[in-house]
Length: 61
Image 1 (cartoon, rainbow, N blue to C red):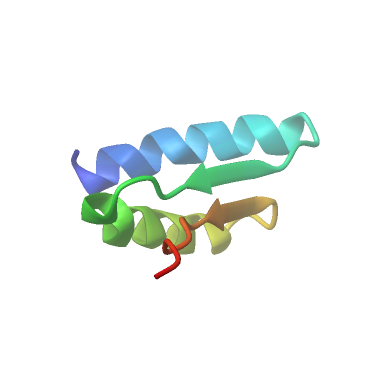
Image 2 (tube, rainbow, N blue to C red):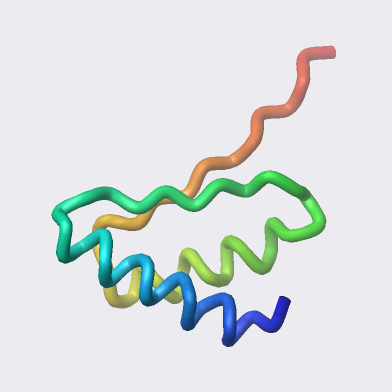
């Protein structure tokens, strides 16, 4: 996905959840998208204080 398009869509969601007084959670599901998702989260945090990100845990050895 184009990161600017993803950020635009995530921003719309962040605006809507802020207006509703809700927290927004972004989930990192695939390691192949982690950098993009973390980049998006950082950009959103520049404007919003209600956006969080979840990270998968590593399985036990």
